[in-house]
Image 1 (cartoon, rainbow, N blue to C red):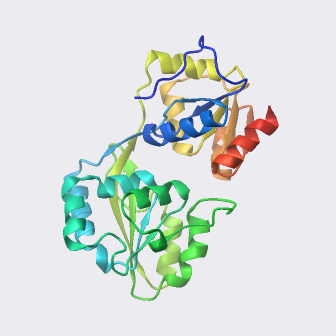
Image 2 (image 1 turned 45 degrees about the horizontal axis):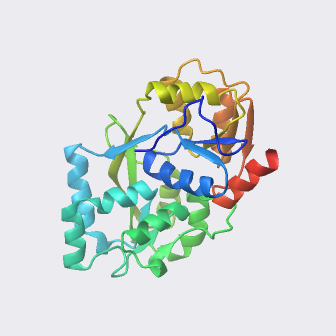
Length: 283
């Protein structure tokens, strides 16, 4: 479990970075940022867990079993990869039938480098993974589509592996409608499957104190999801953000941060080097 610094603890650098990604991803970012000399600490604002809806579980099992029938499987995040392949029976099925997305004709689509790493960890050969170029301006569905559009043919089936909000009925789209429309306009069909749930975190007293301190002490809030901002508002209502600084990894997230009340919002690419450079240049 990640330990968060309390407001009274000394930091190892002049500027503190609050990493708001889900816990598993936050741990990786904190490690990398600290290795670059930044005082990074985790404040996960999205809780990730398995999907327990029986209908969604059945659909997930079916998608695993039929993986080889899809032209491509698009994983919306590293969590989508981890939960798609996480269950022991799923891993055994892949091993026994040689149907990792990929062992046959199925391609694996990833919107960003974090998802690429998760796919490689899951055993997907790198040459079967399609993703935006490392120097792409953004890591999102729009940029991914530029890379993968030539693959899609009329009659193809494309699987999109995603999450859904905790407590919500697993439906379609939820942020991937644009990509689905492009695929369908190319003559292919889209199937969504839910592999995990996203929910609001339950902040500890220490984390709540950290949030209040970081709102006014010059810390940079590293924001990679608009949903995290919604959760922050419910977990720490009334948090004074007029003096808070946010580093947003997408224009839509920057817009949401301004709407949430952050007094200073800066955009940057969602890559480690860009995040570090942005922070150092503003110091």
